[in-house]
Image 1: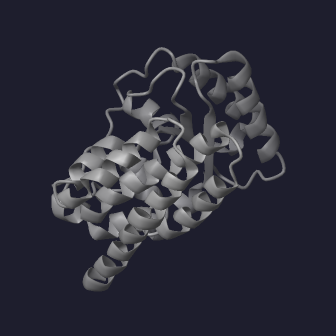
Image 2: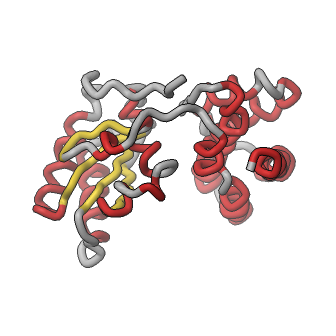
Length: 255
């Protein structure tokens, strides 16, 4: 069974269209002929974004490196978004070279992302270079085998947080990662793909109902409520370590 793709003909939500147009204008002006293609991913691509809470997440593909002006261009885009578009929480931009994307080595990384998680909004759509994907352990491990690294990084950020505001951001990011990684663990059995973190957690529980409490607690972290630091760390250490071990066992079993 092939995984679904996002309908590119479905219009974006009106709250996010003006900023998207301005970002594209900035990219065209700043990169000129070096700009190959631009993609939107995340909730804006899926048309499920929430005004005031969702980011505009983008992938920018260029023909050659632009390190000499990358920081200036990206910072300008983020500044304009913050100044003129309060309905958008922020702008996230990932960059790649055409040679990196249109490469067999990228079939489970860039290839999968562009094919099933993105919508092309400018240029030649590189997702056409790849066929349809089926749910597999290869996809799951390429996207979430790094969960142990994420846990280490975000555990440190949470430990070092001094205020509720400093705590909420990292706890939401790691909760989203753990919920998605949970479903990826069983995706090769469930034969589907979900991007929404809460939906990922719900589908994961079909195979691990004993983790109901942990998934509920991750949902609370994702909601943006400030949770006592000790409770957050306890959840990361218990469920996070269990998840890492399950990935290692599955990889050993499947290869």
